Amino acid sequence: MKRISIHNYHESMGTLIDLSDVETYEKRKRPGSINLTYDKLMLHYSEYLKKGVPYYILCTKGIHSKRAVAILEYYGYDVTQVYF
Image 1 (cartoon, rainbow, N blue to C red):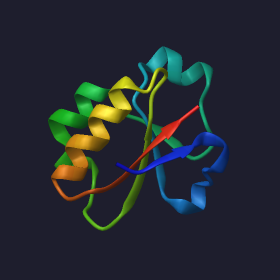
Image 2 (cartoon, helix red, strand yellow):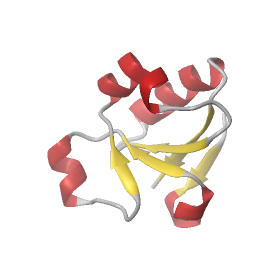
Image 3 (cartoon, rainbow, N blue to C red):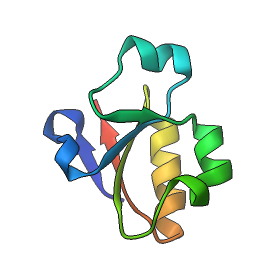
Image 4 (tube, one colour):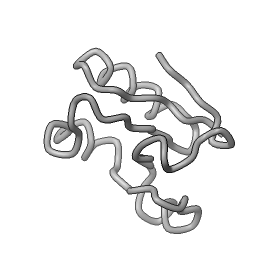
């Protein structure tokens, strides 16, 4: 599983997906990021993601992002976990 620190991420690298709930996302929104809750992403990943496109996934504690990256990587998506 690929991992990167939020300090090393730049929006030119790919889309940053924040799995936080809407309220938490609004409080600490990162420039260029989009908000998809863990459940929404995992239930509809094929609607939101394209294979071959890099995505960077983060959440507050790293639990959901780690799980999402492991599953999506298994399905063939280019995903990287972002941690604080």
